[in-house]
Image 1 (cartoon, rainbow, N blue to C red):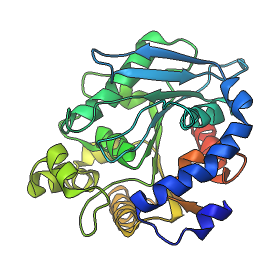
Image 2 (cartoon, helix red, strand yellow):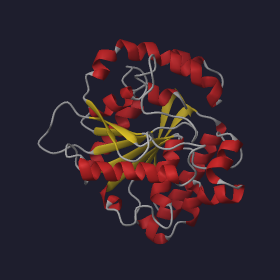
Image 3 (cartoon, one colour):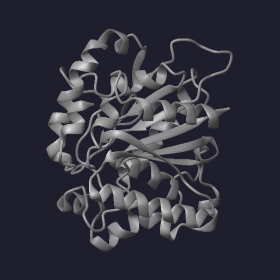
Image 4 (cartoon, rainbow, N blue to C red):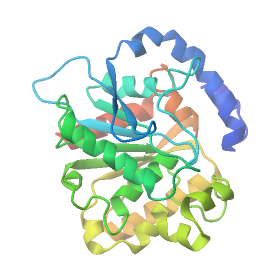
Length: 301
């Protein structure tokens, strides 16, 4: 975490290489432990982007474990559930961390710009959840949780807030017991953290974007949609880009206003936008993950 503390910038593209390089040696030391967690890969749709990895808890308690879906970020145009060496532990560390805490963890790929536009990636993550409910017996299908990072948080929030509901004709609405938004890309007003050309390809015009981004969906959400929301927790790093800080503050304020209740929030000390996910299973900076694991367990009981 000393390297992260020494990075003066919060710009995502500037901090990405040094942040990743800071954690790769730490993860490498724990390679055997990370890879000891059972993992299986399944295809949940028609394309190569419709695949998911499942990380299984080592022990089976008397009851089936809750199921956590992690939707990674990547600015709507980048991201894979598994990377080649030396970064092959980048999301394995994430899945192994939560599985080792008794939570069956699912990491799906989804379609990306330029081969997808809103709401297709949101439909993809929804379909990954449907696949798990229908085909996987090791976890409790009545206790589903979502954890999305950056653009992945936008997908999670959009799945809950879009109208007409993307959950219509599914049973997911009553199965989702909580949603964690990690450094969420929740609106793109002011200083957006995603390049304008990517936003245009994904959302369309500025008017379409303002309507379809999570903050816009929250603003126009019906009372029925708001009443159906599961518990939400929001996590941000201490050193986030201004666009992420503003978007999360705005979203939390509006969510509290519309629900009439305060929003649970965590600030991950010492972290930046990138280090949050790489820290898990590294032995450093894991506190936010421990808090989320306890939050999942509490809402699953």
